[in-house]
Image (cartoon, one colour):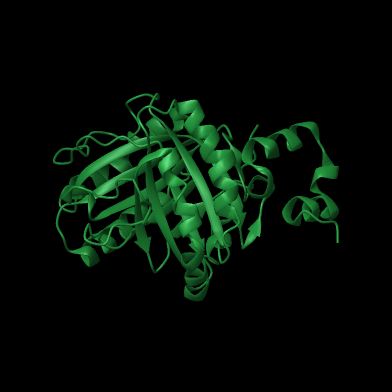
Length: 305
């Protein structure tokens, strides 16, 4: 059984990330999904992990093959048009100075995006994101942990970023108060500007239609799909539907197939140092020697000194 705490809330452990970005990713159409996922996890992931200044780096892989009941249909709110994703990335920093260090060296990372991404859009969160509740004991997941997880993308009904952000904060707070919600993390980025596309990766599309310029993203975790569906039918959730259309024009939900953590609190995880699948093998076989300081030193620097 996956580890979850009914009494402990680990939300505060994310507070060290003061500045971050949430990036949507779409794989190149002729790259098979398994090749894409392997490259992203085990080639691109460790490369990104080593860029200086990085405080947090998490890949969330999304699946297109889960049921259509991830988020309920609500009057006046429609899905985004022509919106498919293969993942979301969160990159975070402890300070603006650390972000500048990362940005100065990030060209080596962005040059790699064209190998597997058709489109990436980095939404800036200069004031950070908020974890409102997190009952997951594991701070560095590396795979599918058995919980029912999803990311829901919301498009604003207008262009008042402050009003939309205030509504989404209130909305998320109400959702997070329900005991059925095991994790809720809210991202309310700045308005995206196509005139200043991000990230600056060559040969990759970074443009968005108007309906996706001002968005919010909520990460959810439930114990099971049954728990999620019961939550959507609860009186508390139904009571919130009436006011949503005044602030939200679009909503699209994406099921999570795996979460891979490469950097946490400025430190490389085993996945960040070795690759995600290699880290899974080390854990599966109980290879403690692979976690020893001398081995980590050798892998990271090429020297035992």
